[in-house]
Image (tube, rainbow, N blue to C red; front, side):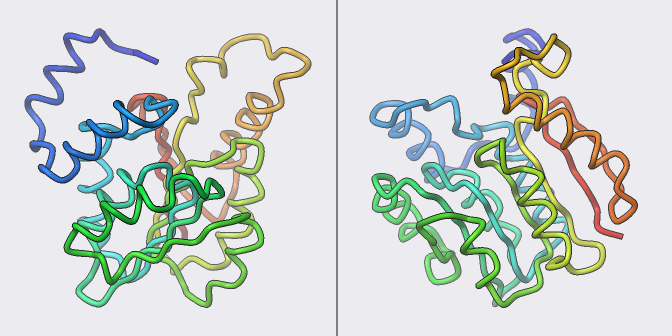
Length: 213
């Protein structure tokens, strides 16, 4: 979804930090070999994720929805020296693809892949998180959020992707469109929940930054 012109998007990318070589290769191979490559964060959003992570300097990161591992590597750039990143996905066909790129990165020993249902895996992670990135099935965004908030350190950041949902949040919701309905409820929850303060950024398909109070 393009909320600004492609020319402006290119200008923004050209005047932001360059895409690291490893991520450029991952970006290219995802577009060549993997279904739905638009799910990849991409150069500009990736640099946003990297910058936010560097500002937080997290000890523990949780990512829900790995896809091909692009966002995980961006977030890992801000990890503290002995920090960890747990990333969860239910697509076993992408596991080896992700691992190939994780193993080429400086954070190979800090990134932990989990395969399966995030709602079952998250409670088994005995950690307090400083940074969480939610980018998985939209119908469970509220469930993920409610599960994660008690596991956050005070001042921790929860990032939620695709919250503008290609502009569908402004359209009449179709009766069978559960994802849009849930996202509307989720966006309102983030606005109203007294446990967090939130700003919604119109980056790509919408990125919400919520700080745990």
